[in-house]
Amino acid sequence: MPQPDKSEKKIEPASSFGFVAKGITFIYNSDEKKYLSVLHDRLPVYFFLKEKVTYAGKVRRIIDILLYTQDLDAPTKEFTTENIEHDFADKKALFDKLLKLREAIRKKQFRTGVGREVFFEYQKLIKNMLN
Image (cartoon, rainbow, N blue to C red; front, top):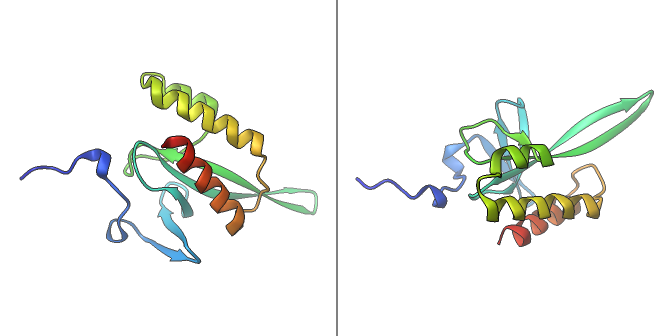
């Protein structure tokens, strides 16, 4: 029986524990032990967004952390320049796109807190940069 092309692998509802709320898909990530919002659900790179809560004295701050993986069975990694260089240096075209995406996200300076508007801004930017 022929195997499906890996480039066509998509997150399917039965393949993961998750849910959809207000147009945003959430998937449970066992490494993080929490739900992550799915920004991009196709190869070559899957992107997820998580919230990290920090405190400075009594001030609570929510930070958005962009995560990625090339394989749904592999751990997610933070989307940093160092990780891009490590994981994609041998894939020049994709490497260049991901570095441009990283820079575009840095320049955008999205508000933190993973609200719907911010989520869809991230999603649109990723889609535009990877296509």
